Amino acid sequence: MKYKTITIDLAKNVFQACGVNEYIKPQFNKKLKRNELIDFMGQQLPTTVVMEACYSSHYWGREIAKLGHDVKLIPAQHVTPFVRGNKNDHNDAFAIAEASQRAHIRFVSVKSEHQQEISCLHRIRERLVKNKTAMSNQARGLLSEFGVVFPCGHKALLNGLTGVIDNPRYSHRLQNMVIGMLSEYEMTLKRLKGIEKQLNEFVEQNESGKILRSIPGIGVINASALLASIDKGQAFNNPKEFAVWLGLTPKQHASGNMNKMGGITKRGDRYLRKQLIHGARALVSRAAKSTDPLSVWATKLRATKPFNVVAVAVAHRLARLIWILLTRQERYRVAPTSIEVSA
Image 1 (cartoon, one colour):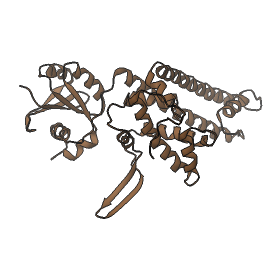
Image 2 (image 1 turned 90 degrees about the vertical axis):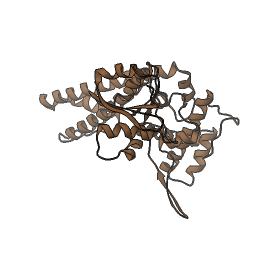
Image 3 (image 1 turned 30 degrees about the vertical axis):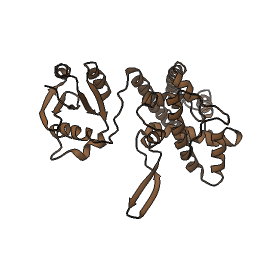
Image 4 (image 1 turned 60 degrees about the vertical axis):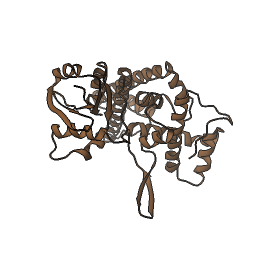
């Protein structure tokens, strides 16, 4: 029997599979062990398979797609309103089926293994950056108790730690402690450089990566993160949808004749949004020295708006520009013919 949709509520070891007909009426709703899932899906005629975009969903999406099914991933927050009754796997699986039938639901693309590898590198890098900052702050705090104070900055930290190790006025216990700090700090720096080298190679080997690098405010980190998440932007129909997905559009509160626009929604991928705004900040900081249309626009806006407001506005405009150039597979050109996107 062919089902219109089969939904799977994922977990570590026990899954819940629900099959519905064309009237969204459940035909089965049962538990499956991890080692039974692929065999069960292999016995089903090719159909649409929907899962929540969560832990291990991309892996299972790739495996099930190999069996001929059309796999779709749905954001978990869109499923929650459709859960009826108690919160359990049985109800969750059916809620996924109901949510997937909504006309305007946006599904998440299944990532390839290569895309996930790049995403993993970004997550590891983000943790290492936090560790690096924590180690720097701890070293400064601990050494201040011994009268050792040095300016902010990476080089000042390294010089300060080295100065303690080479100074006979400090005890051997303190020097050994600082040697350990310095070794851990340098190892973290080495790992960060290794990750950034891999990300740079990924971007340079990809034509879409070169397109992104041509855009002001987009470096290796932003380019690789964008490619790992959206590829060529094929999941979006227009640049506005991409900006909305990133959470860079104003939050609206409307009722009757009242319509208020607030700050940005902050929906979507927090990491991508953060990195894009960081890139926009760098662009705004040096915009006065550049003559390309984007920098000129940012400079004019800076004359009347606070820095952070301008940075978010530039990030919004960058998001639209990114989608347009990736879709057209064209590089950014600093000329009167450059693509202009309305703010």
